[in-house]
Amino acid sequence: MKADFVVDQVRGDTGKGRVVNYLLNRDRYTHCVKAGAGVNCGHTIYHKGKKIVTHGIPSGIAYGIKSIIAPECFLHVRKFFEEVEYLEKNGIPADKLIKISSSVHIITDDHIAEEAGESVIGTTRTGNGPCARDKALRVGLRAENVPEFKPYLIDFHDEIFDEVNGENILLFEGAQGYHLDLGAATYPYVTSSRPTLAGALLNGVPHIAIRNVVGVCKAYDTYVGAMKFQGDDPILDEIGKLGFEFGATTGRKRAVNFLNIAELTRAMQVTAPKKLFVNKMDILQQVDTWKVRLGIDQILDLKTEDTFKAFLAEKFPNVEIIYSYSPEHI
Ligand code: IMP
Ligand code: MG
Image 1: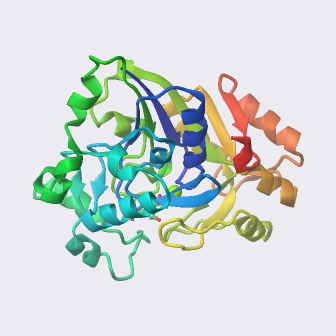
Image 2 (image 1 turned 180 degrees about the vertical axis):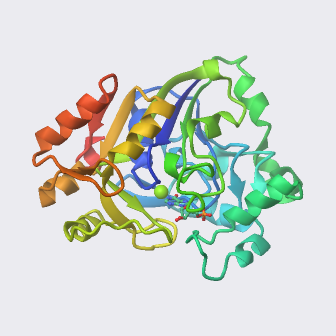
């Protein structure tokens, strides 16, 4: 078995869906796998010219390959069926392609109700934290306990290790990002799952199966939640507007700041991708502003696109950096 991992290097919303699209069109894969998280994430894809947003289901479903919700994911039963119906209506044979690992934990309506009020950390209110808590307390409900899920259930281990009909090549689609990991420095402004590369391996993937790690970030940073994040420069508001920085799950406005090089470096050191996609370069081109942050508040003005690229190339000399300017480019 071989596995490629798409890992967001920041805080989600970097355009992983586009990268998954690019990889599925270029390489042969047998499965697309949602590596972790609940229905808090939103994967935006363009299928036959139409914008499609999935939450609990991996975006790779649109490319006609078997798609799996891995053991580390959380799923809400009604929302799952609504998503399948929505995809079917949009011409994607989701019912046939989607499989659920039997040990996926179930987000209940009670979990969602618990998060209904104002959240101190600004969650997506999709019941993710309470579901993760119940999993850790060992009182959670799993997919195998849900009768309606029976036709979709698989044992993830058996599925990926069954290679009688040829080698499995898995594409893992990460959710959120490295700096939203439960263990990240900005705790408690994090999610309750593990969106790092290690989190993807927790599904039961042997380390020797790792073929490629593909990193994804944007030319600037965004974040949704209660932590102070928006930078002072008024151009950042403009970037947010041009980049249409609103949450795919909650519609909330995302806070915007310049790319934090210290954070990106940390994520790159740990996840060690061979390729890094830098999305939304077109937005910085439109405002012609090429600034990065060296730490929380120290801004470096690189002045031109070429210097911006040269700076990243020098920071990450062993990484192939792929710049993307619009969906058509990747
Ligand atoms: P939760 O995952 O709903 O508990 O939210 C915890 C934090 O993670 C909040 O700041 C959310 O906005 C953020 N978050 C969760 N999922 C995503 C995502 O897919 N993209 C961006 N931020 C996310
Ligand atoms: Mg997203």
